[in-house]
Image (cartoon, rainbow, N blue to C red; front, side):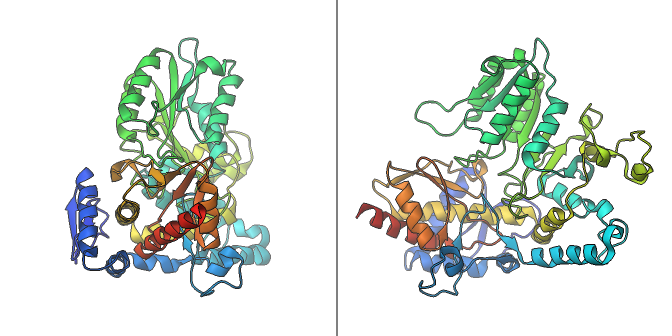
Length: 475
């Protein structure tokens, strides 16, 4: 059978015996047709079992701690208590890698035995003085950047403020910031505060792109049209790589190129895209980007953040701190600032060692399997999920899939918009059944089959559980 573990990025679809290379929307049609063919003489369970057996990266799941049904439900009377739950919320918080506990314990032991000397000598060759170097190169590979363009530090919104302070330099002519109208609240608040700090009125300076009536996604052309409309007055564009509510993936390269051609700085929040999509931040000429690492990158709740600054912007004025100083002379303490190389010059304080090695535990898995292979499986998983949902609820479904069908326009997430009054009941029933998803008020359940630790059989269990939950909610 053909393998898709190569780092060369291709789309493939399961045909029943092999993986066939396809492109674009052909993928959706081919995958749906192949799944229907494979279930003609069997069931979705049979198809899932076949796909799982053929999955060349199925072994990645063993590198994560998947909660049991009892652990998730806190119900000791549940049937088959030792079986694993179905965890489909990696877009909100990724699962713990098996290596996390081991790496954290190693750092605690070094701290206990060596104290401050751990900064310079380390039993596991991870001196704290350069702890971020253990993750920077792998992180750069995940987001498609040069190593020197990436810094692992702080948290997402802190990093966003730091980069906005460097890149948002409003003038009397150019002072507006364009965002989408349902930006993640933290991004929205950060942008508003930056506008106000610079003395502008957010009612005038904040431009929000809103989907047209009856739609949930933002077509690229609408984004470009908004940029054109406000180009003469716009200083900066900030959009998400993936919209957290709908799961829509934006055309980063095309939007970036167009906005920059009109003299606009372009930044991206990749919180839902890093570790999910195959990003090429350097090649796409993105000015800057930020992301968290606790979703698809599995670094743990409140984990350390990451940022990208394109090499063309390394000399941009910015806020600095001690850790931005060049490493070899940092401890001279002479207050003569010598900036570090590249994005490291945007650092402030020394990064948390425990947070950094928690991220390392996950990035080791990414490094082993490669983002291209993970992305390929992700497309297959969401394609299988969409196909099964449409087959299970063929007439007047109680929900609408508001995530685009084209795999190029989505990541590892389908957002289901339920008819009024259903979502809370359905979500509660899924929780009680040890099927973990993520709800967003008022009526959306986000389902994220994550390729590192989810299987096609997980998808089947979710759809079967959803059907039972809907029957219970309607009773």
